[in-house]
Picture 1 (cartoon, rainbow, N blue to C red):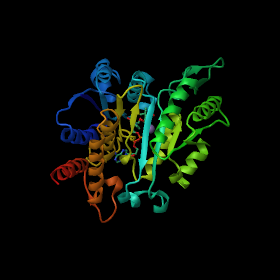
Picture 2: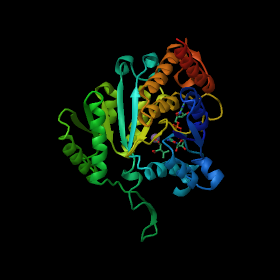
Picture 3: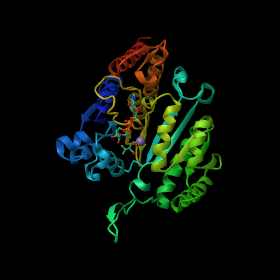
Picture 4: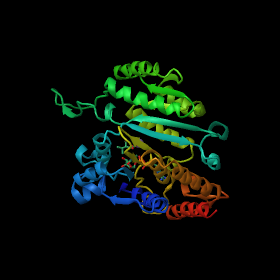
Length: 357
Ligand code: NAD
Ligand code: IPM
Ligand code: MN
């Protein structure tokens, strides 16, 4: 098996290094290969997704990804933005189903900004469609109108088959969980989302054992804060899913805790934390590596079929939290504050302790 390592920028390499420590421990025989992406791609090869990086992604069984992004990117042309490399990777590999679980570790209840009773026992997954929507729709760009005034244009676009395949992924995921799907859209305003709702409802009839509900995105955002435990699988489009998943992160205490898996037509997947390159804390050894480590656990489960090993890693994370280890983002008085490296080492030690026991 071959695992591609794309650490990227900012805290990406710091947190991925901890996940790789865990990988070396759990899968000592695995072949790994690194490649630059994002700003790292631009600096070494002039583009955010160099050809050899894409070729490696195609060859590999799975990709462990850090984060991309650098300063001033919002004003750069699209081809030069670090994030474009990630978007292209998701699209080229047809990774259309982005699973972003938000799970409350009991030890972190006090780290959430919400009241304990609201988040205690929280266990939901946001399934974000990753290949369509306003992220990829044409026409797009900044144009100049007849009067000389410039305007920006992006297009929200979904085909029926794109909605169908994410719908099936959502209903199948719900069958493996608590049997509930909530589809989030803006069908009261946008035609694209009217089609989304129609297709979700149609596909839902093939899964009579799964309960389907619908919410508009604004109400969904509110409900996620008011009563998040009612959700099981939330399925939504690319942009709404991006936003909702960062909000969901705060239910669990920190965005540094949220892993993700991007899956497509076969078992190959891309595994990355939900967070970005966090330039504000990069290079200080304070970033939380648990989202990256938990993403590696998802890699073990989904791409390699190693459920036992995935659970081993997740249990190790849990015991490290139970042992009081906390990075700054989840720190509470009375716990033991550690850096990025120490947190990675603690997870490896917990794995060793389990093996020895
Ligand atoms: P961000 O997720 O990088 O950071 C948001 C906040 O969360 C910051 O205060 C940061 O310090 C904190 N944070 C993030 N990860 C953390 C961790 N592991 N431990 C502790 N604290 C953590 O989002 P942003 O600041 O909006 O974006 C920064 C850059 O990252 C931008 O260039 C953006 O485009 C990019 N980005 C990339 C990805 C990705 O690669 N998948 C995702 C989101 C943002
Ligand atoms: C994410 C990020 C990306 C996205 C950016 C960096 C392109 O925010 O993975 O959540 O918007 O998909
Ligand atoms: Mn995001």
